[in-house]
Amino acid sequence: MDADGTATAWLDPGPFLRGVAWLDGNRPVRADPADTERLPWDTGERATLPIGVRLEFLAHGARAVEIRYRAAVPGPTDALRDLAHGFSLWDRHGPVREVFTDPATEAVVRIGLPGGPGPFTVHPPEAQSPLVLGVRGVGGALAPAPPAPRWVVHGDSITEGWWSTRPAHGWPAVAGRALGWNTVNLGYAGAARGELATAEQLAALPADALTLAFGTNCWTRVPYTAALLYETTRVFLDLVRQGHPRTPLLLVSPVLRPDAERTPNRLGATLGALRDAMERAARERTAAGDDRLALLPGRDLLGPEHLADGLHPNDAGHRILGLAVATALRRAGFDGG
Image (tube, rainbow, N blue to C red; front, side, top):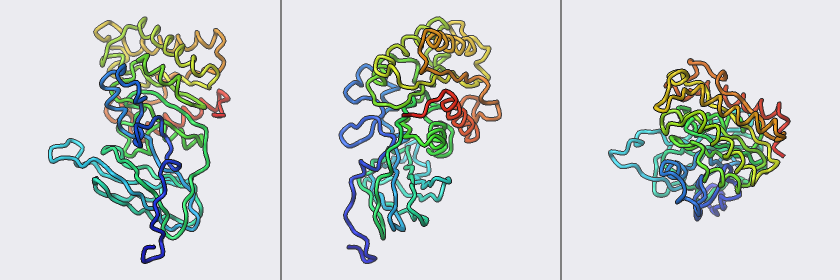
C-alpha cells in the first residue's frame, strides 16, 4: 500500500482501451501486422501511431487515475520534440482537465477525477506513440466502461485529425462522442488512396458500422483520373462488402479544397470531378440494392473559414464535420447495432 492507502497493484490496461484495431504484441496498431508487406510505405508508417486509442473507465470512489506508460523520447533534432505531451480527461459533458508530462522510457501520470462514477475518457498524447502499461485508481477502484458499438473509420490525414489541437478534437472523435460509439480511427495521413489491401483488411476487421472518407490524396499525392477513382471506389466497396455484407456503411466524399476544386491534376482531373466519380459509384451501388450504404457529399460541409491551411480543418471544422457525419448516420437509420 502507498502512504495514502492507495493499492499499488496495476491493472491490465487491455480491458480499458478503446479504439484498438489490431495488436502487435501488446502495442495497438492501425493495420494488420500480419499483412503489412502489401501496404504502401506511407500507410504502414502512419499505422504504427496509436491515433484514437484511449482509456475509458468508471470510477468507484477514486479521486484520481494513474497511468503507467512508455513513450519514445525525441532527440534534439526531432521535429516533434516541442509538441505538448498532454493527457486529456473527458467526461460525458466535455473536457475536464489536462495534465502535461514528458515523454519517457517509463513514467506515471496522475490525473485528478471529479466526483461521480463517470464514465471518463483519457486521451493520451499521440505524437510519441505512448504505450499504456498499466492503470489504477487512487483512493478507490476503476472498472472498464461498458462496451459500445464499434465504428471503424477509414480516411486520410483529415480523418487522422491533422490540425485539430488535441486528439479528442478530430472529427471521428467528435462523431463518436455524439453517437456514443467506440471509434476506431484508421486515418492514414498522406495515404488513403483506395488501396485494395486496406479494403481487404477492413473486410476482416470486426465492425458494427463503417465509414470511408478518402479521395483528397487522389488529386496530387498520387494522381488519379475520374474514371480510375470511380472504378477504385466501386471495387473498394465490393471488397469491404465481402466481409461486411450488411454492416451499415457511410461514404463521405472529399471536403472542400479550394486550390483543387477546379484545378486539373497531372492527368487532367479536378477534385470536383474526382468527388463526382466517388459519389456516382456509391449512388449506383445503392440503386443496385445496397440499402445499408449511405452517401454524405463532402463539398459543402465546410467553408474556407473552417480550413486551417486550405486543406485540413481547424477545430471548428473538425467539429462541424464530425457532427455532420453523426447526423448522416442517424438519418440513414444506422444505430451501430
